[in-house]
Image (cartoon, rainbow, N blue to C red; front, top):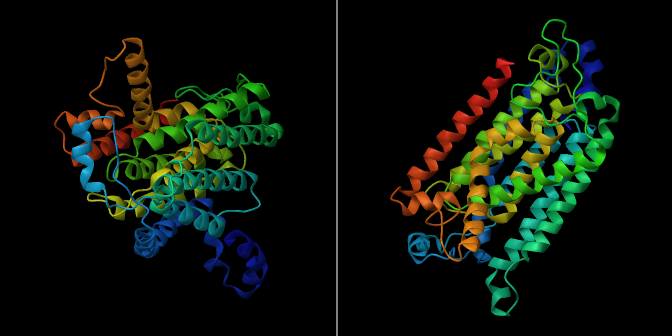
Length: 388
């Protein structure tokens, strides 16, 4: 919306001598930072009202795990409302609509992914946690295959449309996911190098794995006060920087990164996610006043992964979101080992954050240490860009 107003008033402002007051909005880097602030403020201002509404709807329940000691540790969270992810998704949606170029295909598709996964998570939360429905004997939440079907569905559609839209710049928009130290341009001439291009089916398959996988990974991580929201804010900020580089031909060539035109506008969406997650952390830090639930976690992971797919930085995003990846991998290891050994376990309990909790770390120690690890991983990921 802001870009439309800027274009509408540009000539009039130039003639009147006051163009300098609105010229700042032509710079996507400014609008990305503005999206961080805007979404943060929206969550802070509206958060208390939304939490009160969730409490009135009785959208809350005691978290339950297959471990008696862990259930005792988490029992104090019984009265905390969930489904607070509507604060994150809503603020990110409004901020992006306000500050991004809505003529940009990648932005519009990203908003569709955001809304799709938020609604999916919201339906699951509502079915699981509304006490009135449970009193009527209704099933608790969507079945796992139902959630996966809708996650893979939007990931498939996103992969197909990203691929089709990148036809004009297939040399890089359809390239194999960029490895951390792989060059896309010749260091001496700044001419593009020949990259390994993916056929449509392979590109779409990778998109489905990355988007649905990270959506579930963030969902698994959302198990402690401030954990997922803090990690998401740091990860989204790293993605915002990557979008500003990959979407700008000058920066991309300078840093030997693949240049995917028009993707710099996705920095506004990434910034909105970062700011909304930070705002949510205000209410979600220990002791949490609200949990994000599937409404927030499925959308956060899915949209961040969508951005990584568009800018061809899936591998670098796996480094940035390394804690999310390890959380999901710990569950797969635990389940696989449990089945293979008929009852033995690798960890005390999975996901991995609960393993450390039962091992003697306080909840706050687990959360802050995971934040620190993610901040270091983002720094390493960004450093590898210069190492090219």
